[in-house]
Length: 263
Picture 1 (cartoon, rainbow, N blue to C red):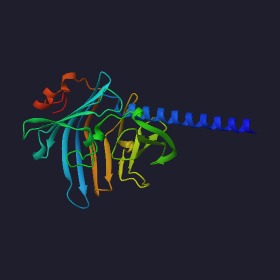
Picture 2 (tube, rainbow, N blue to C red):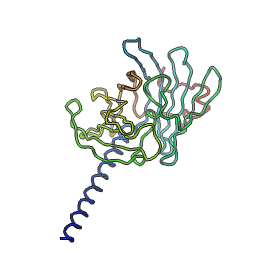
Picture 3 (tube, rainbow, N blue to C red):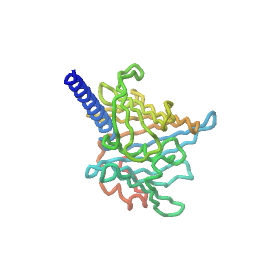
Picture 4 (cartoon, one colour):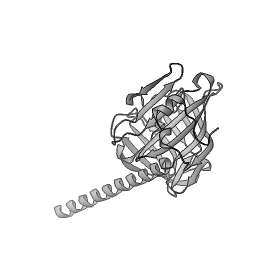
């Protein structure tokens, strides 16, 4: 009897390991589909609280993988009080390390570094955080499958990811399309809570496919803690754009260098 019990326990352990590995593979493929393309676009961000008039932000954005690290460059165009503010994000060389983030403030004519502890801070008054603009990697999370679900009639896995390092949330749940690994929704949870405090929705009709890439043209964000909602839309999106590496530099940041193809 003991021998059979040991065998059953071993088999259950194997199933759990296989399940965890499957979840990890699903999440990495979803992240690759989301962040794997070089892109440029003009992004419009509207943040609203209740029935108040939306606060509008408009910025041009470019992303590119250089030496395997995602680089993000953005210049704000509207409203007037943030016009000329520019942002540069560079993925860390080692897994688990904080991304390098720099902001150019034209009022001070200085570049300021954003510390890793500010990753969850609101990005210039929106419901998006610096973390939302960073490339995500499966290795930074403890990953498991939470079952399957339907998102607007589309079958999807629920992939549960708990950050291995410090973060402003306990876990995040991604709804990943079974058909093509597009991320259709993301929910953030605080420790000990079963109610998501922040939700991101990426509608299938607004996801641009190219090869293995699945890039959302529109993201709806609800922050239940702040009582606000944000809509991010890419007015013009180019996938696999030809961008020079020196666009993603402190020199380009300070001079607010324009992104090729965006006027």
